[in-house]
Image (cartoon, rainbow, N blue to C red; front, side, top):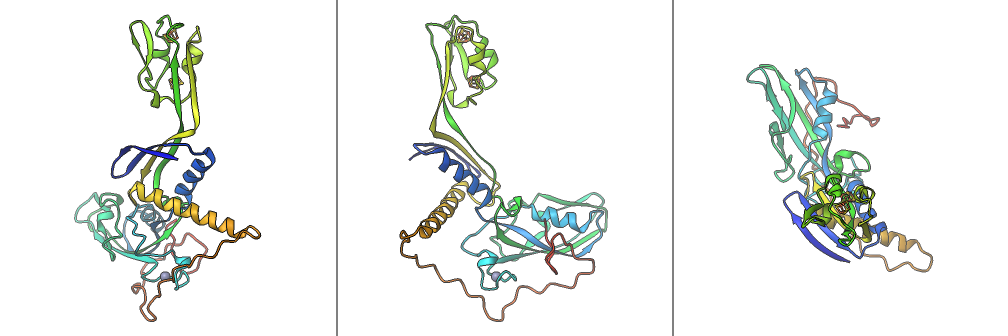
Length: 308
Ligand code: SF4
Ligand code: SF4
Ligand SMILES: [Zn+2]
């Protein structure tokens, strides 16, 4: 496999990956979208809500806020020694207490105060509710690691897409310079040069074949290499895109090891699994104040408010 970085920014990574089977490429795409864990708010306790928005909607909006994810700090609730009840090893708390100083004040993620300074919203400008003067919202929220397979709020990416690398050729012997392909190609792959069509941006081709159908002398050939891909990963901001790739390969490796261990007579020696972090015996998650309003519930679990 050969990987070339074409472009890298804080949230986006564009790669050219060669000599890889389409199956592996698709596995990577699906695992990044559905099985790479990130933090998201899962429980919300509404203590006071004078806004015109229902508690459930506020909880839903808070759940969709992308949070910076720190894998070193938290374990998934189902792997935690608290067995999913919620402790400082598997959940991060937030508080929100906002009173509108004027009509039209917009409560945002900037009003969400994190207990862990590393687990914070990716922006403090995401709107939560528009309030009239004097209206208040008081709430607590609890974020956990989860995966996109359970809810889209845990997806680490807004885009994970790939396409096979195209190859566009013009037979200049046949081309008589009618310009039809230049007009037909909405991706601006061609331009005219010396009365002939020439390829100027091959990677931009979407393999739609419009140019091939347009050219009446069959001067254009569009093909692709099915083992080479142009990959775009756009993070929600929860993790750097290269960290998302790294984590997704960990997930693939784990699946592969599990599969191998299930083959009769092929079981490799079991890897030593690092011991789970121990939760302190008596240290509890921050006490939740008694809610004045009804708890927001969106799941069948009793006493839990879901942000879904
Ligand atoms: S459509 Fe065919 S003939 Fe016309 S400019 Fe393009 S390649 Fe040449
Ligand atoms: S296949 Fe489609 S996108 Fe590609 S060069 Fe032809 S018209 Fe443009
Ligand atoms: Zn826990």
